[in-house]
Structures are given as structure tokens and as C-alpha cells.
Amino acid sequence: MIWIAMCASILSNGCQAIRVDQDLKVATGLISHTLCSETFVSGLDPERVYAEDIRPRPGIGLINWAVTYTVDRDNRDVTATVAGGFESRAVFREGLGCLLVHGGEAKGSATPPPERQYNPLLPEIAGPGVVDPQDEGLRVALDRAFAEPARPPYRWTKAIVVVRDGRVVAERYAPGYGVYTPLLGYSVTKSAINALLGILSRQDRLSMGNPATVARWQNPDDPRRVITFDELERMISGLALDETASPASPVARMLYLETDMAGFAESAALEAAPGMTWNYSSGNTVILSRIIRDAVGGGQDEVIRFAQRELFGPLGMRDVTP
Image 1 (cartoon, rainbow, N blue to C red):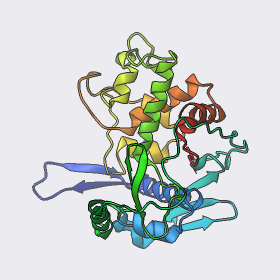
Image 2: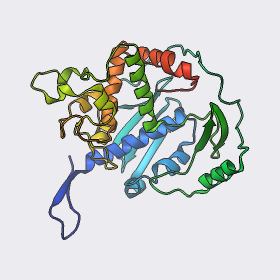
Image 3: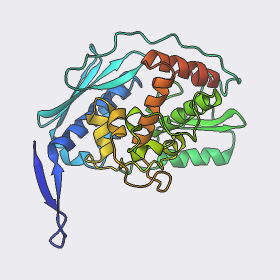
Image 4: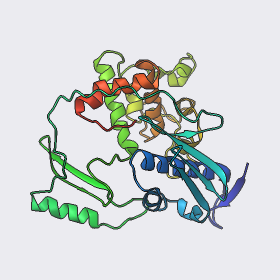
């Protein structure tokens, strides 16, 4: 266990204790998982991914000189270290994406992904080729967007798709990317989670205004028992789950160090009364994700079948990897 006390300046009022070993483990977790996803799901070159999507991130620049990573294409996994230590490994599972492996976990699921179902409710929004803009203003806007330099922590534009009245009217992709390149969803995934909640609500399987069904909050003396589904969804739960760029933040620990991410988020204490303070945190969404899983059967196959049948299929989304 490595601790370092850091003072911001001579005039600082105190020092902050930082777990360097934890921070570096978070860094290798981020590196291995990102490289695994973009290599084995997106089909991109890992060296380019590191240069464009990882190296510019705040903090990574301080350790670039010591970072090493190995992409094992036979076993479809990625291992990352800093100065030969703090190792993290992410493994790819067909149809299920990449998973960080902690401790003695199995290498991956041997269960094949369930059969995908596609019953789109609406016509296709575009053909198989890239749609060039017919409007000169759109063309100029795309030119400008792809001419912008990379500005850490923001990576340069990878893809832009413009839809009007249910049809793609313009799209453009960076070199190496195209219509069929799966891209990491990051927090856009929250929209999918919210849509699945809406579907469960429509089916009368939950009510957004009711307290969330989190087992560990059900003690009558637990103030968290009144947190509703709606408050979790709107990021006003009051839970102490800060999400910042710091690897020491609770959400960074949740994402890259914890085997049970939802369990970690559910264990957070209240720092504000539910419904009173907005605090953006992926911890809220991870709790809701577990609730959805339990509501539709409790297993990964049940979740994927439900999402494909009720959401991705009707939307005509054929290439979704959760």
C-alpha cells in the first residue's frame, strides 16, 4: 500500500493523502479495458487507439513513459502495467464485450450470446453507403468539425451522422472508421438504460415514482430506502458517488477496481437528501442496470434477450454489443 501526502502549494491549508497504488491500478484498468473494447469490438488498431484516445487523457501523460500493454489476439485479451506493476487485464467475450478480470475470476463466459432478434418498427434510415451532404451549410459544418485539432482531454472527431425526419442527410467518418465501425458508447449508454426503464414502466413491472428495489436499503432505519427509481435516473439520489477526472474518485474505483460495481454503488452513504441535489454519477446508472437485470430474469442472457426484443430490435439496431 503506497500513500503520498501532497500539498498544493506553500500557502495550502493542508495536505491530501493519495493512494498512488490505487490510482495506478485505475489507470491500467482504463487502458486495458479501452484497448480491449476498441480492438476486439470496434476492430481498430490498438496503437492508434492508445495514441488518440488514451495518451491525451489527463494524468496519463504523467505515466506514459512507464506504461506497457500487451494485446493477445489469440486469447483476445489485453494486459496493461505501469513500471511493470499494477497489472490489469481485460478479456473479450463474444457478443458480450470486454470485462476487467479481478483476482480469481474466470477468464470469461463460455455461454454463447443469445440469438439476436430484429423486428424494426420503422424503415431503414439510410442505405449501406456513406450519405454525402446535399446542403452546402452541412458540408461546411462537417469540414470544420473534422478540421478541429485534438484538445486533451477531448479526442478529435471520429464520426458525425445527421438525421432529419427519420433519414440520414449527412455523415462523415475519420480515416479508419466507417458506417459499420462500432464505437464505444461511454455515457450514451445511459440513454439505453433509461429506455429500458421506460419499457419496464410501460409494462407495469416498476413505477418510477416508487422507492428503488435495492435489498440493502430496505432496513427501516436506512435513509436510502426512500430513494426512487426516478431520483436515481435523474441523478438526484443524494448518494456520495462523486464522478470526476481523478482516479481517486468513487466512480473510478467502481469502474476499474470493483468486481461488484452495483454493490459498491449501493453501499454509498447519503451526502444530501434524495431529490434535493443534482450530482452526475454513473453509480446511479449502474444501480439501475442491476435492477433491470433482476427484473428481467437475473442473468446476462435474459438481459440481452430483453434489450434486443424490446429496444434494439424495434429500433433496427443490429450491431449492439452491451
